[in-house]
Length: 215
Length: 215
Image (tube, rainbow over all chains, first blue to last red; front, side):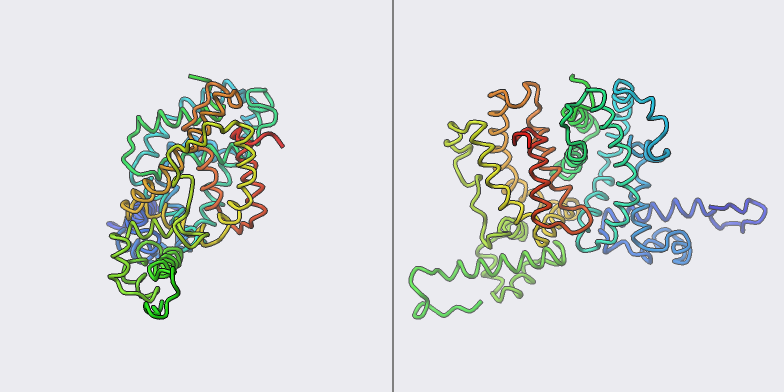
C-alpha cells in the first residue's frame, strides 16, 4: 500500500488506506446481511463509494475480498496475533505451559468481545454457509485465515503434551478441531450471546481442552 | 407425484406418505443447491409435483418443512432417532460404559456414510449458514433436531463420568459441544471427504472425548 502523500494526492480523493477501510467495511456489512450472493464486487464498490477498479486493484477476486473482510472484523483473536508472527514464532521456544495459559487467559476477554459481536457471528455463518454454494470462498478463507492459526495452535498443543500437561496419547489435531469446533457451534446456536456469557463459555472450553488450569 | 386414486392404490399404502417423500426430497435438493432463500414452499411444491396446499397441509411453515427435510436426509423420511424414544430412554438405566462404547462403535460406520454424503454436508452448511439471515429455521432445527439428541447424549456422558471413565471434573455440556462441534467443523472444511476418511475421523474424535476406548 503506497501513500503518495499530501503533496501529490488529489484533494478529496480518499487515501488508499481509507478506501481499503471503506471497502472492507462495506464487504462485511453486505456479507453479514445478504450472504455471499449479495456481496459482489459491484455492490461492495457502490456501498463503499469507490469505483469497481479501485476494489479490483486491491483484491483480484471476490473470494479474496470477502476473506479479507472477515479477517478485518477481528483484531482481538489470540490466534490472530500469534498467526501474524513467524510461523511458528521463534518466541515459542520459550513458551512454557504456564506462560501459554497465562497468555490465553489474558487474551480471552478481548476475544469474547469480538466473537460475541452479532456482525462477527453473521460473517462466520455466511462463510461456512457458503461452503458448497461458493466453495472458492472457503478455500481462500481456509488457506489465509485458518491454516496459519492452525499451525501455531498445534505447536502450542504439542508443547503442552511434551511438558506433561496433556496426556501423552492426546490427538492434538482432533483436540484443536474440538476446541475451534465447539466455539463455532456455540456462535451459531440460536439466541443472543453477550460478551460475558461467551467469555465464561470460552474459559470452560479451554479448561476442558486442558489449555487453562482448572477453575 | 401421481396419485393413482383409491381404486388402484394398493391397500395399506397411503398416498400421503409418497407425497411426503417427494416433498422432502425436493426440499433437500433445493436447500442443498440454492440455500434457504431458494427453497420456498412454492418452489418445493413445484419440484415435488404437488400443490402448495398439499405441502402446507403437512408442514405449516417453511422452517418446519426445511427442518424436516434435513432430518430426512439418508432415510428419505423424518428420521427415527433416539430423540423419538422416551426422553431419556428408560433402557439407558442399564447402559454401562462398556455397552455404550460398543453401541457407538457399531453405529459409526452407518453414521459416517450418511454424514460424508455431499448432500448432507450441503444441508448442514445451508442450515447453519442461514443462522442470521433466516433465524427461524435454526430455532426450529434446534428444538426438533438438536435438543432431543442433546438430552440423550448428556445422559450418556454423565453415566461415563459416574462410572469413572471420564474425569470427575469433566464439563459434560462443553465436552458434548466439542464432540459435535468438531464434527460440524470437519464436515464444512474444504475438500472431498469419503466415508472411510470420515469414519476414521469420527473414531478419533470419540476416542479423544473418552467415548471410545483407546485404539
